[in-house]
Length: 117
Image (cartoon, rainbow, N blue to C red; front, side, top):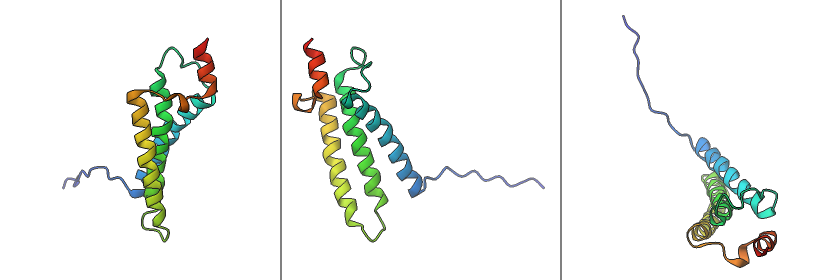
């Protein structure tokens, strides 16, 4: 008698989904935050400013989506709407920056000084 082999697809649990959102948000938001803070400046001349500064806002959007998803099925379900709204605003801002450029008002001061040289 042969062993019975049943293949099942990999299933994503709700916790796994939230953890993946947090991880993606931390990576992109963290890299963007390092660029905004001026800690990571070696990207200048190699990566376009729209991409680097857009990563920050898109990372915040993904983190907000993870937070919104984590409050579903909890007694404080209303927080999901707050974080979903934050995800929509920061996601739209990140997409706008990626497509049309970083408005001067959202550029860090160190970057404006560097560009004027």
